[in-house]
Image 1 (cartoon, rainbow, N blue to C red):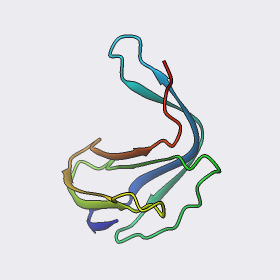
Image 2: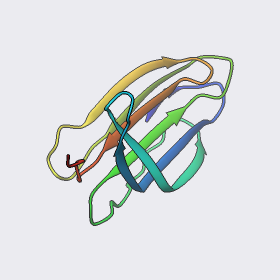
Image 3: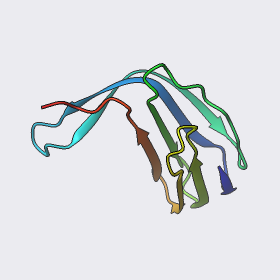
Image 4: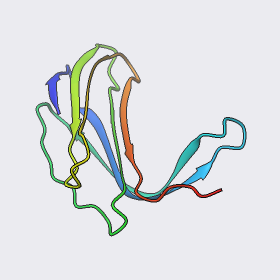
Length: 106
């Protein structure tokens, strides 16, 4: 993660979750069993070991009234193209990345 933020940003990371199908939108929805929450200053770099299922949620949130200019990049060892997204995040703004190895089966 890189950019500028007036205060520390909230980073939530989970490798312990499962997906369900939202009855209304018919979209996958993540149910988090356990997550680690940190407040970080930019720039920030971390390596997060995945579970045997290889799934991860990464969410970066600005809780300050002053906007933050950020770039969130997530790379996977599987060779999958990385997530690389920049944004101007106002109060409550969030960048979120979800990779789920196990897909919902109908």
